[in-house]
Length: 322
Ligand SMILES: N[C@@H](CCC(=O)N[C@@H](CS)C(=O)NCC(=O)O)C(=O)O
Image 1: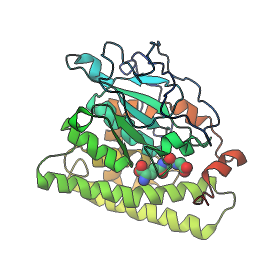
Image 2 (image 1 turned 120 degrees about the vertical axis):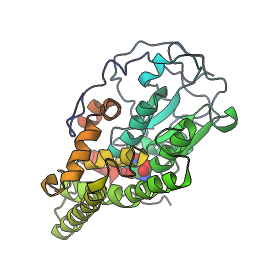
Image 3 (image 1 turned 60 degrees about the vertical axis):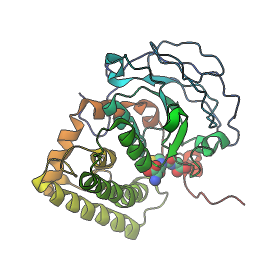
Image 4 (image 1 turned 180 degrees about the horizontal axis):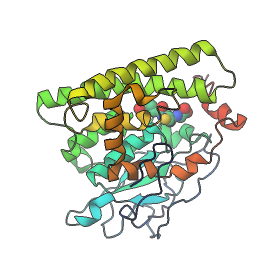
């Protein structure tokens, strides 16, 4: 399995499944910002769907209920079923994953792979402004991916969820996997999940920005966020000194951290001083589901030049409208 943190391999054959070709949603059509449709990347076969049925995974029944939430009208490129195809007894409509290949997006593709849930990727090319499409904002009002629509939500009705931490918790509760039900176990997981959401993710994101993307080099900002990443990895290293994973057992807290930690070099942090973290990183990257999750549509994102002024105009300097 791919172990490279920087360039995850293409999805393995275990992940490959049939693809569903979506017809446009009648409930919403992306307007502003959704300037271009992404190109298909995965080698898939296609299956026709009726306008009412958003997705069909091969060998599965269509969703019983049409999602009532608005979804982007662009075509779907990928259906990934993880290991779900090995346990086809239960009919399961695929979860729609609104996604671009980034550390936050990977959290959910990894979780779906770990849980062997069938899912269909709805690409949200954030470098082209597709995160501002009204139909996407209807499910993700923060104009950030990832988001999901689960056609089989509570009460067997569709539900949408945005914010990667909330999605991980939702999927953990839904499947009973990687998120303990007992209160002590849950608290262990949640404190490290929130640590990632409020600490490692934002600080590493700022380090990436000021070290790699910013049009001007600002030494104070670079030092500030590089130092903070270094501090956070020290915290993580101490935590991992006497347990294999952040909450003891493998959990959604580890999944939340892996994408960011795998990019420690971009944050200017050498792991030589953090042996327990380095061991955890190797263990994580060796997990087949992690490799598969990080490989989802990685090629498309890798082609983007983050220094391109058109890309920077979309991603940086965003302000509230009006
Ligand atoms: N707190 C959010 C952060 C998500 C986030 O920042 N996503 C980025 C990509 S990693 C995004 O969609 N950026 C679009 C933009 O900046 O407009 C979460 O964890 O879901």
